[in-house]
Image (cartoon, rainbow, N blue to C red):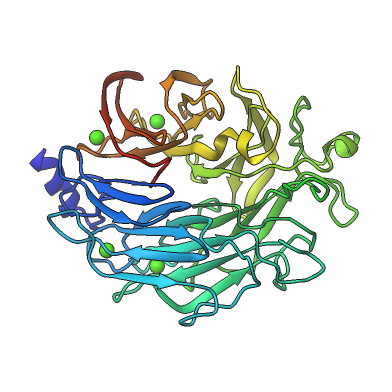
Length: 425
Ligand SMILES: [Ca+2]
Ligand SMILES: [Ca+2]
Ligand SMILES: [Ca+2]
Ligand SMILES: [Ca+2]
């Protein structure tokens, strides 16, 4: 155990264990819900705080080697900085649109409804992307949505250099339309294979009456941070008179620019949830998004973004539903390398039933789902014991289950009585 921790500390580019708030080399469980936020190391004492959470994420914003916790709720993002040894959090800071240098957004913005962390500019400090999917920046497109990128620094997360992205932003692909909900899904990964993590933002277009087809945007990371230049979008639906890029219809075969399917595919919302990872062989991160109806859309990365020529859908047998957010089972997608074969594996929790599946990555992409039992609402892959292999943690509102996966089977399960349906990844 100690050797594993020392190895991590001695690597060329020391990087904290993801989710390790207390600095003991093991990820802590960060669980939230309507009232209480709990941070608990495995086998240790829980730190609690009265704090509502609608989104949770962790990342080391100030580069001190300790994971910092971000909590999104009620239009504000709160950062709780990690503190060594006891797992309790140290200083906090708050970010609200229009305050303290954070760019202003329209009313009812939903800032903090979604969060993702990644070091987009590779300066050693983790950065934060915050979704504000309810915001109205253009009255001709109410709830068009936006996302704001905030950068880490030696002094922690800062509003300095904050970037606002929306489909109203000049140079951003897409179009103004009511209830696009841009920012409702966020992920980060090196889709373009240049060594910088890119920001993936979805616009599910999910409200009845306005649903015009979901979209997935890719914004490139760079030494200067997330760039608008070179951004790309794939969508289902008819965009500016052009046929769709992505055939994301239930029951249809996947393929690019399939004119015959346009009518059927128009108005297909998707992308409430999205993850990235190297699910296939190659240097490009792939993007996997929930498209409802018990299906996932698998998109391959490429030098200029998502490779529109290589699309496929994956079914989760036994999972049914519509493309409403509650049925986009991917609301609980998690990504990590569970079996340490170098390919990212995907965890999907089936909404409604709470069943948990692992889809193992391979040279040819994700496997068929392997169902491993009941999970609940939300899932995360976290190395809670510090052996560099992630465990599967799921939360159902009443308890957190931690499963140790060995040889693709559940070797052991621990149940912790932690309230909260959200678990930080
Ligand atoms: Ca930190
Ligand atoms: Ca950074
Ligand atoms: Ca794997
Ligand atoms: Ca482990």
